[in-house]
Length: 77
Image (cartoon, rainbow, N blue to C red; front, side, top):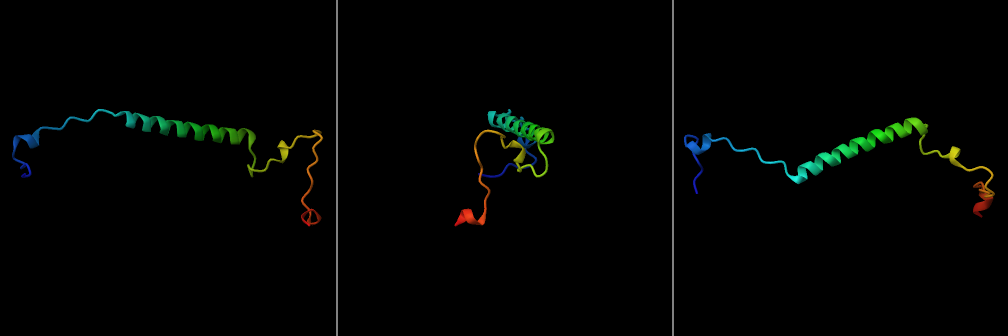
C-alpha cells in the first residue's frame, strides 16, 4: 500500500479531534484528588505538626496505668 501524497485532496482535510475518553476523565479526577490530598496534608502538618513530625511525645497518654519501661542496657540482657 502506498503512502498518500501531499498533493492529494485527502491530505488537506483536517482530522476531527478525538472525544475525551473515560480514562482521560479518570486521569484528571485522580490528579485533582492527589493535589487536594497534598494541600490538606500540608494544612494538617501546619496545624498539628512540629518538626520533626514523627516525634509523638505529646501523644503519650498520662495516668492510664500503663508503665512504659525505659530501654536500658540491663533490660536487653
